[in-house]
Amino acid sequence: ALTGHKGWGKLWRNCTPQPAYDFIIVGGGGHGLATAYYLAKVFRKSRIAVLEKSWLGSGNIGRNTTIVRSNYLLPGNQPFYEFSMKLWENMEQDLNFNAMMSQRSIINLFHSDGQRDAYRRRGNAMHLSGAGGTLLSADELREIAPFLNFDNARFPIKGGLRQERAGTARHDGVAWGYARAADQLGVDLIQNCEVTGFRREAGKVVGVETSRGFIGAKKVGVAVAGSSSRVMAAAEMRLPMESHVLQAFVTEGLKPTLPGVITFGAGHFYVSQSDKGGLVFGGDIDGYNTYAQRGNLPVVEDVIEGGMALMPMLGRARLLRSWGGVMDMSMDGSPIIDKTGIEGLYFNGGWCYGGFKATPASGYVFAHLLATDTPHEVASAFRFDRFARGYVIDEKGVGAQPN
Ligand code: FAD
Image (cartoon, rainbow, N blue to C red; front, side, top):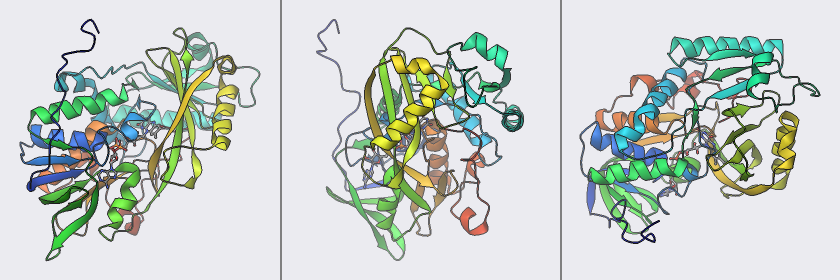
């Protein structure tokens, strides 16, 4: 700012498309950019392009509530998210970029004996993968978060499961960090370039049709989040997925109040406090299918009701903004990272409302799949055929398990 914001170098080149690449990644969100970065950095690949229909980071990577955690239960998920957490812990050094990663903890509240038992089981699964975690009593919680509604509540708070290593990171900083680092490794980042189709010869993908013409490719990886079903329809694939909007909200800045991220266990509400002091919160998806990046008032009311039930002091804060992003909701709440039935075409999606925390691991394992044609060991359950085999990873219903 002392320079009047003049003379700052660009973080990445604004590339024009080359006729052909070895790898094309469709989607310049967090997952696409991370994939390109790890392909170049870890798997030593070159001739890589990321094609983004809008500007880099214009999708969910810049719209989420920034929560990072690895407090999952199921064996298909927990090792993957713990792998991601370890990448988060070293990401800023790796990218040489300040993404404001802040391990300020998450507390999932429980409100009944049965819920406490379920959380204890989840905590044990977390310890098995090295994620850590502590079960807190209501008295311990009163010390940490006295503003919660302990007494006059329909669902009294009985305690919480805390993961100390969880927290928040500045979401668009993550996109910028991966973009700059990928660019420095020679990845072409191409904005305003929408993929409209996949060209095939003898059953194999040979490139993509785009709003800027045909671009050849040996391998194409799709990571377009909420647009997954639309983009894969161009390859005649119908996905086990629906698109819904998820809204988020931020209040005016308050003095430091929240000890970390807090989630309600008797309704869908989660809240953290940004470094600027705003309370950042969200809840359920809007109930209808949509590709619009904005939601409707019934869910606004529902989310704020949840917040008021949990911490009535929220009613004194003024809301500054709300916004929405389109979620790729898979049928079991878990992602898909897999080859498709078309040679040379690979898919990464189905992150529902929890893909921000997955960004580093998703990029890493997708790069592994693209480079080696084999799934990474922590992502071996994220296959298309799990729906045909009935081997679903149904983790969306684990108590209050938002974001
Ligand atoms: P995106 O950033 O959406 O990237 C996909 C990109 O593909 C977009 O830039 C889009 O423009 C581009 N694209 C689409 N179609 C085409 C095409 N045809 N050609 C070229 N490009 C195309 N997750 C958490 O872990 N923690 C949270 O706290 C959290 N909170 C959330 C709150 C909200 C309100 C929302 C909306 C999401 C939240 N999420 C959270 C989910 C998380 O943000 C997403 O799962 C994740 O960002 C999706 O991956 P991405 O970053 O690659 O997606």
